Length: 75
Figure 1 (cartoon, rainbow, N blue to C red):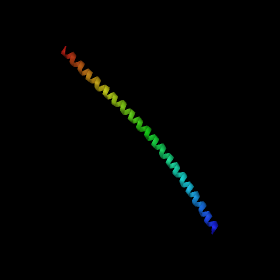
Figure 2: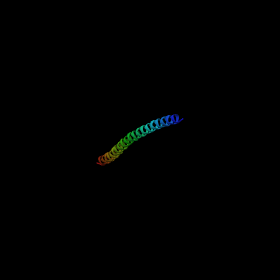
Figure 3: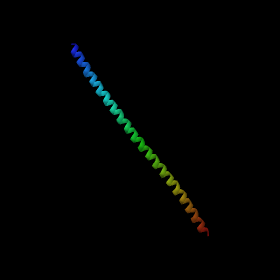
Figure 4: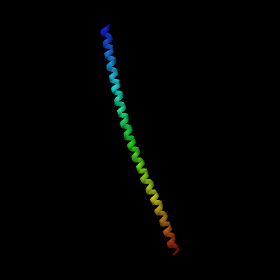
């Protein structure tokens, strides 16, 4: 009976160690996924800033060209 109990404890201990190892791996994998997602979001944010700045520049350039056209039409 004692041997069966010890064997069961060993099996449960081994199973628990396996589950802990799997959970650690899943946690590590999740952290890696979060890091990759954060990098992607940072790149998207940077690209949005560049696009916004380009739009602002294009609008300013268009305004300048409209003003230049109006000045030329007056003369």
